[in-house]
Image: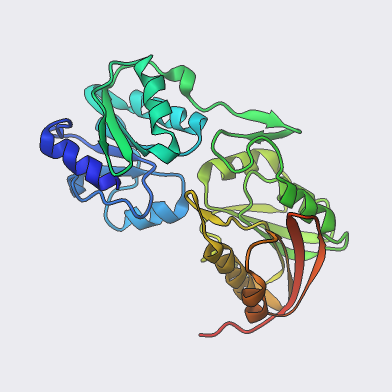
Length: 326
């Protein structure tokens, strides 16, 4: 979808690639086709580790402003979108352009309306249920830059999951964790650190690995969790491996890929947790009741039980991880 608009913009001259200099692409997702751009000059800038790793096989992922031009792939959060546009506007050299591209379902109409009040925006190119428009670099959008906020003593940033406070599922999971939780523990999909802070209230915990794929969320966690037992990993929780097998894994796994529900993502978290745990280790997780995790839990663990919950969520304790198939 994004490639269709980019291809048309380049073919029609709505966008003209600079003769030299680097072209930054902010926030593309793994399914985005960037082949219309010169491979040797593209720099992909994304804080989501799976996307970073995907593009690193073909493009540079090392920041190096100023850029000759930039393409902003619109995130869903309005505040996060503004921050990304402001970053691009500040990092493109005078004379370059910034293109903003996104789906209608991700708020592209609102983003372009906001931009028209601040910059001289090109005519919008509409295709594949989305739009693309551009403006000349040099516009001061510094007031759109991401500003941290504080919620219940925790720092969050626009666009991170549950930025307005701990979500209901995490609160239920935290309350269900045993006081005697101990040993080496991992918090998979740690976000900005709410569950980690609760885990570290247990004196028996010797080490806590916070594993988070969103760089902004992990940056907040580093501010929010200062206990020396904590270690931070910018990583895909489904493929991350601890140095040694763990005594417990705690997680509130995501279940969306973009706008679409994807139970397979939570299933990958469960299988990943199984591989990380020692034979006597256990999993503590929370999930929406409608998600079909029973089969994968039975595949990964010999025993499981619901230990808490409400009408929307269930907290599960799974024990005796099965040996992973090679």
